[in-house]
Image (cartoon, rainbow, N blue to C red; front, side):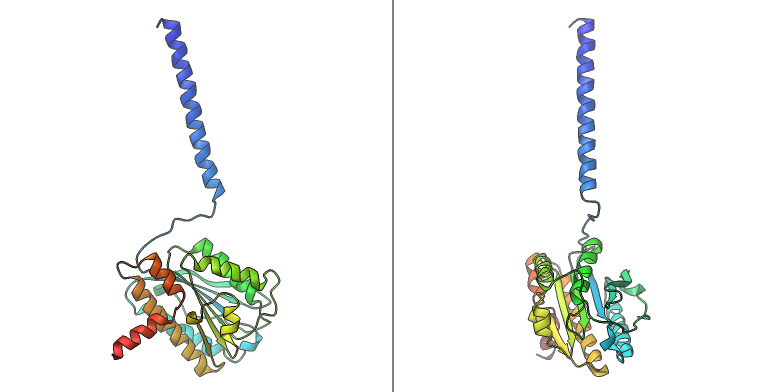
Length: 260
């Protein structure tokens, strides 16, 4: 090939290479822009990321100390376990349907619950949906457990309807998320069941200091058992799906084995 021909060929090759680089960079940028909130999932074995949703509506008045004490005991017991755990806590009422008070803290860093002042009515659907939104953005592990404490029926949601929340819960359960429902002096199985909460992950308790102490104790013992199970080698997606159907069964099985 003569000199002018060689120069022309090199020029064409250079233009083609530049176009390829631009296309690749553009495609990469488009992918990032399309998923601005996507986070890599950390798969550290046994690290549970728990999200607690606390009803602080007016009917909770008189139980402030019981809730704070139960929460403190829960944190104390979880700290005593080997391994880590991440915790998020939000409160809800009709004045503020979703107020984050603890966000993605390691269990060793979690402080006592200071702000818990009952007021307003019960936007349960909005609160549950908001917590799912929050967990989607912030969960850093597959081991997602969402726990709700409430003492009232839905009566104040502005955004969400029952069927929409049910659909969201069912979608997340397919991913292995565990949804736990604790109800005080209500039909927890009917209320939680209408939102997709499994019977094995639901409990009712009395709206008394002793009732709340018992409920927090049940949640803590089950959380400890869940963390222990999920830290084991060979914990599979299938086992995670099974666990999502019965949060409390792990603690009950451990108790039976201990007394066998």
